Each structure stands twice: as structure tokens, then as C-alpha cells.
Image 1 (cartoon, rainbow, N blue to C red):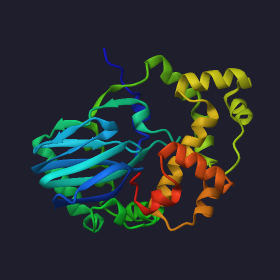
Image 2 (image 1 turned 135 degrees about the horizontal axis):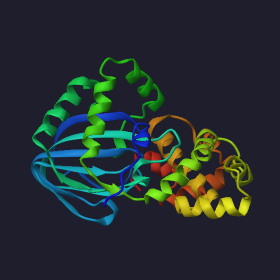
Image 3 (image 1 turned 180 degrees about the vertical axis):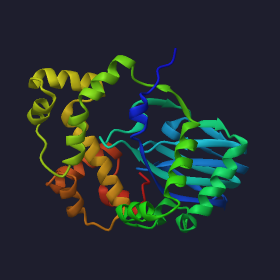
Length: 291
């Protein structure tokens, strides 16, 4: 029997639209090692190509949906031409955790007849959200926070969010964590919220252990068992993810991003960023997520 995510957890999922549109591309749609902080869904209507999320090849077929989760390295190739609907979006919980921490997903599913209409409705609701250029190197650096605030004022916001969640649901297979571990994530809720709210500040493991009401050693063991990472590595991972978003969506200087993500030391920021992404921050920004 498959596990089910608690309804209260799913209700907290926050999604925000970045880009949506319909495009006809040719052999110029050929990008290697894109590491994007946004999730992407494609609905192929005609043509042929392939994607390689985490080096697993999927041939793009008309009538199929494809999901590339955020922070997953992926390469793209068009054989001759491709006509496709696309949507780029962010997804996270208020704790900073990602939905992909909890669920297993398919990268490819057969589209339902309704899905083409859902994409068309997204475009109708968000005509200003089409990419002017498809090359990741040429994405416009718009302020993400400003975009989200604009959406919240829009009449179409609720419908847009509903469609995004509906499309994302197509790819869910099952939960990743056992039911007994959901309680541990719940117990650590205040810990995750504290980390997510204080990434720009110094975060001490002793403080996290205090929030969780555990001793330092016991907290470290339980945290690793719950997340798969030691606390400091988890914190640095979240800081790098935030840095990737800021690099692609703002014009902040590298020094400013270094401070905003709590590194406060540019050489150390460069070193951790390169180890995590395979690219320096400057090159990541210049290449638009290509690494």
C-alpha cells in the first residue's frame, strides 16, 4: 500500500508561476547541463527531441507531458523541430522544504485531453509571462519577489495556482518517506522554519537543537536520519539554492548575494557554490543556469 502525504502538508505547498507559453523551436534548442532553480513542465504537440534529467534519456513525444524538477541537472536537444507548451514555476513549503523531498515522481506521463486546455488557459491568464528568448543564457533577470507580489494582486492568481498544482499532480508516483517519518518532519517544523527564515544570518546547530528540545548529539543524529544530511550541509544546500535563484532573477552583486545567503566570505561562497553546482556563481549567472 502506498503512503499518502498528510493533507495539511499538501495544503501548505506554495507554487508561483515564472514563465508560460507556446513555442516552435529548431535545432538551436540544444542546451547541456542546465541546473535551474525552477521546475519545468512541457507538453509536446509535434516534433521530436529528448531531455536528460540526471542523465536519464527521455525521448520527447507528442501528446506527452515532461517534468524537470527544480535543482535537477538536465540537458535538452531538438532533432529537427519541436512545438511545445512550457511552464516554469517555483514550488516549496513555508519551511523551505521541497515537495520532491517527500514524493517520487515520473519525468514523463501521457497527457490527458484536458491538459492542452489547461496550458492554453495559463497562457490566456498570463500573457505577459512568455519567454522572449528560449536560450537559458538570455533569460531576463526580473525580480522574482516583485513578480510574486504582482501575481497576488491579479484576479487570475487563484486559477493560475490551481492549474499549476493540477499539472504537477500528474507526475506523482508515491511518497518517499515512510509514514512514521512524517512525524519527525513535523517535530522539526520549527527547525526548518528557523533555517529558512535565517539563511542570511549565522545559524548554529546548538540553536537548532534547542528549538527541537534535543541534545546536540541526539539532534544531529535525528536530523541526518530525517533529511539524509548533517545540519550544516543541509543549511549550505539551502543557501546555495537561494543563491541560484538570486543569481538568475536579480541584479544583485555577488557580494550582496554572498551576504544575503549567509556566507559573508566571498572565497568561501565561491568554493561551496562550485562544489554544489559545478560552476562558479559568476559563470552560473552568465550562462543562465547552464553549468
